[in-house]
Length: 163
Image 1 (spheres, rainbow, N blue to C red):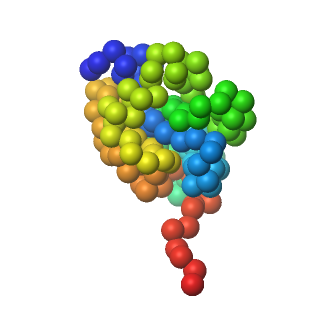
Image 2: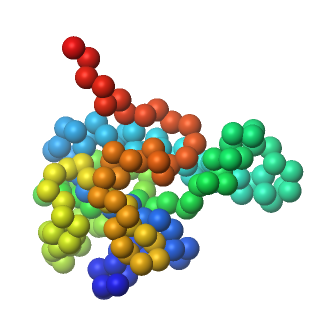
């Protein structure tokens, strides 16, 4: 593991991590972010329901929710902005329910470029899935596979093209 991993991704529970490379100026990013936020919130709500049901020792979840909750892992997302203007970063960041690297650190510490290079980010939006224990890349296609990881009920972005 390298120092960047420890600095940014290492979590107290060794959760599965996501690095979300995105920017305010990117229309596909602005289109995808609400879907990712809905999935993130639904996943966390399911985990909270499962925790409450477990605390009460008498599950109040339906059978399908019990199965989803049992499969659900703690997930954290870290926003890595490619914005160059603080105000745009702040505005876009306000739509996200997860962690982010502070704007000043992205530039002063050159983290934006180091992380993009380390994870082979060539376009945005990109969602990198990392193993929370090792920091190894699970997939670079987290954007296309996010429904495999986030449990709960949420609207899914359509990839269909209507002609």
